[in-house]
Length: 101
Image (tube, rainbow, N blue to C red; front, side, top):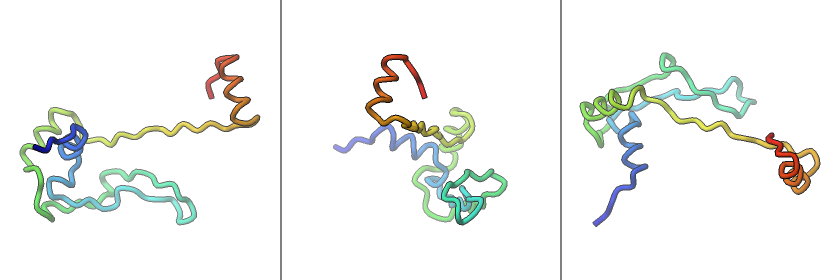
């Protein structure tokens, strides 16, 4: 018997695409030269309702959203460390002086 992973169930219950909707223009870039994509506001997104067969019915999805709060996308801020002296010296400095970059 196959079991569903909790992250799969969470994804289905939180992403609007599984209700049968298609969402365009979720992200944008300021220029074609800039590779970083920024999240678009919901007013600028184009949402098409009931385009394909849903995996979860809309009533259940809306109940989950009401219970969970608003629909949101988890974003993790990437932590980047710049090594001026090299990786091994930075590790030593961090341990010795408890420096956090």
